[in-house]
Length: 549
Image 1 (cartoon, rainbow, N blue to C red):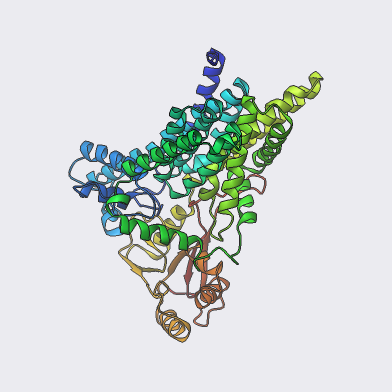
Image 2: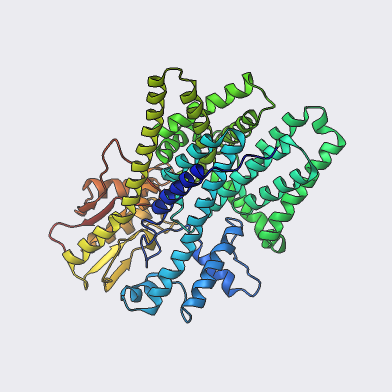
């Protein structure tokens, strides 16, 4: 059945929604530049592609589709500003602090284009969510879902970075949309398209293999238990699997060419989530992921999304299972539940890991919201319900706006200014952390000294303490550090007992050498509007000895 044409009203509303999302995504897009503050932006890998005659990223932690998109953005920038290359380390970046540096122009142009790819992908994702909501439910549901996603903090946060997540979210939504065709028509072509899209999603991040759960649900429910395992149905699944493998191999070709390295990377990825090689007995992340979703969506929208999930389950159980809304409920509920169940098995958790279910959550939130408003018989009750949904959108917009403000006011800007102003450009400044976590220095300090003993994994017990005590006793230089670094030890005292104790002494000012915090830089948000976007505004602490410079 052909869907009715999109009205002018809907086009205008969708354009306004996209404008809001665009404004949120580009605000703070220059965050950190010319420094490289985000360790997961695919800068090294894109450089490898452009240097390799065979386009080899020489990297398998993530598959390669998104890396090739970033490399394409780099290629355009290099053509517009020839003669230079993106810088990553401090010796490369410090000369770029000169406003007239050609290398600085290239650095900004390249990263803006690479991050701009994520902005564009985010906008396309919003359009697809609108179309999915419109197809499964109706015009208003599609618009409300698009509006919800446009003001989802975690989604807009990811759109600022040259990382794979925005492409993954787009492809996940595209796969879930294609599964409706699998359920409704079940043609061989529908299976092939859904399979190919799944392969592209897996070529963005390996964990997209979890799309097999809604794929299987769509196949079995639409065909029935018996027909779903008949030879013809199994043939359709085989075509889908072949299309997925072909799409993956075409866009991550070095998984085939360097299959041994690829296989080892899969093992390493598994061990990252299950260090002992098994998920048995590990601490689970179901609770932390609920908290992260509440933070990523904002609690009002998250609560509305949970209501949408419940409403979707009820609609499937009690409603007409042949309807488009029932199909939509099934596909998106199965995706949410299966992905959350899988990711919660590991103790390793982060907002970006769970965000692939965010578009499905806002779709179900929109469906439940529109249905609730329409169920109100009294005009006053309907207006009140509509006002409630509007209030959630307004709050979410403010919540996302606050996160954008945090890009502009990252603590590392103020910390860098304070260090240079207090100690001078020629003073020695020490650091333990990786370069990406350092403050924003402008001008660059002349004597920035990396102190490596914390990173030396072979130092334990008495060897560690001997090295640490000697350094703190003999050095008078200020030490700059951030929560992005020391929290990894404080959060895992069993794994890093000496380092956790070392930082506890430093942070509480109880170190025997007299080293204590002399300055702290944090961003304080109101309790009612307190987003915690990833990678933004760590607590920066300057340690030193009283009177030492």
